[in-house]
Amino acid sequence: MEEFQHIIITRFNLRNHQWTNRTKNDTPILTESWLEDRFDLFENFCFLSVRNQTNTNFQWWVFFDTETPMRFRDRISEFERRFHRFTALFVDGMDAFLPAVQHRLALCKAPYIMTSRLDNDDCLHKDYVQSGAATVCPSNVLGFGYY
Image 1 (cartoon, rainbow, N blue to C red):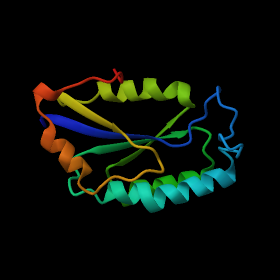
Image 2 (tube, rainbow, N blue to C red):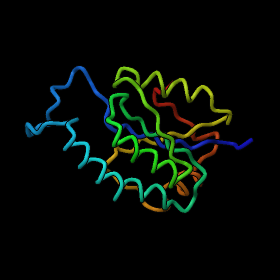
Image 3 (cartoon, helix red, strand yellow):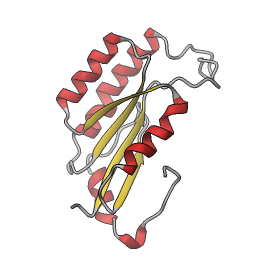
């Protein structure tokens, strides 16, 4: 059994009943056009930066909304095919996100779990996972509310 497990967690297009479905600049979100732009950003930057990590000892959980249109689900399936560390998880909006994370974390077998939150339009340095792995030891363990 591995000493620790690193999980990168990304929220993608989760609905939130508290949002107005518009950005601060009054631009609509969660529309087909917004999703197209968001998927392009994700594929060209975020996805590539995670797939090209020098240390691939991690899992990447990417949370999508259950209402994601089929044409985007096809793209999601392609991400899973191209990178075996990528796991697409479909949940019913933001309210279901934290319980889904908690449930999956409870299934992890490693004695220590390290999680990293990554926005779907951000990138990681190619050695991000490696630098995190190099610093993990039981005396550095902190908890941040996913349990």
